[in-house]
Length: 113
View 1: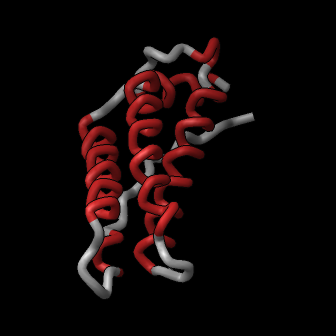
View 2: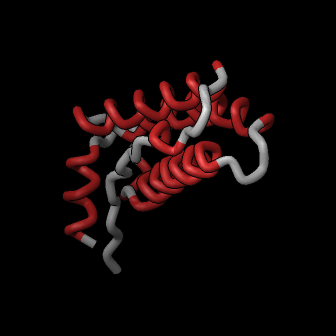
């Protein structure tokens, strides 16, 4: 069985904002941008997982008070869910679950499956 670890593409959720954003929304967007930057230059599973946890704290803080149906909040929620899913999939599909493995070594491992 082959597993594919796909990169998560950060969509500019700020484009959906129809009004000025709250400080919490700004913090959440900054955290998602930081995740995007880390994945562009390369990151190992341990660092990615830590960054996902840090971002999720900020995203959850923002989403807690976001109004229902808010397009920005919906986009942020979807992007965060994709990062959490990617982190779990990466960890689950590495032989031995080596948290120090890089994305490149994960790709190599997937080819051997």
